[in-house]
Length: 159
Image (tube, rainbow, N blue to C red; front, side, top):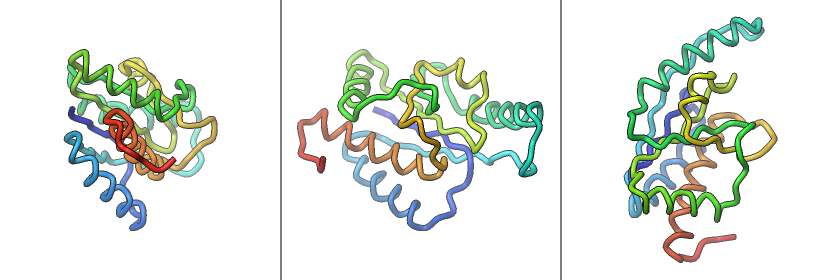
């Protein structure tokens, strides 16, 4: 299986980079994993609604340019469906079983995802009703994908 994580914003924190590197290395035994880091749109701290929409649309165009037609797209969005680790594992297992071997997870920038990206998504996944920094979500996502492969292989993993 090929897992692509398309994410907006540069990762700066060393501890997050180390955690992601560790789980990416572990995931190598189960799947090919690619992380595509896209530039976030520069914008002032306070934005009007139309300016926010413009920022999301520009970031959305960058995201969509990295998605191929054969990707099964899972967008991380607060309004998405919440799943347990076992349910995420089941989703990935079913995708692999039915020939969807290219999965793209999308993590938007600080303002979220554009409507076009959400429309392209085959499903929307929420990790919580809470808001998390998108850089931290990258680490959480990589860990959960690793956990899903361990669950699907019946291998032990810390609960």
